[in-house]
Length: 165
Image (cartoon, rainbow, N blue to C red; front, top):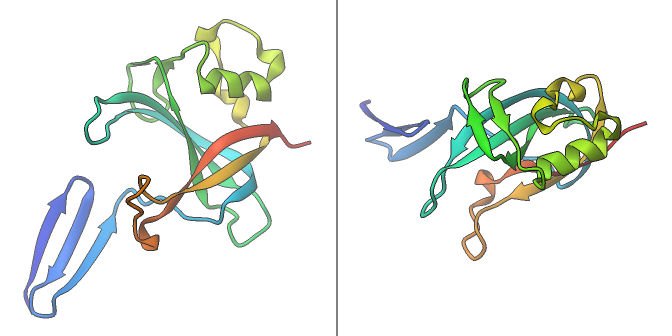
């Protein structure tokens, strides 16, 4: 049986020509969990430029957390995305960035760690380590009026609410 391979920006698709089957496997799969509040533990962070159709690239900070609830979702990774002012080198895992003083990252950081009042260029990502953070997880299911099939849905953190304790 012959098959054709098609590479599309981070997605590898294999199509068996004779059977007409189509398989999509992404190297950047995001998990889907039911919406709600979850206990989260810090996993990692990275910076990147994200772009969406019809918009210029935007500097982003992605903080990945593991769900720490004692449930079937324990260990699942979900991320919180923030717009940031600028990216510094290196970009990527543990990349450097600068923040907008009125941005969501600064608001949530100081809500979680109020004793950390310091210069905005000295916010330590290590503050997240070892903490259990309660976060609100929501579903991403496509743009309004153009909902994706359910198999394409994924979860993201809408808001980091508080330190559990």
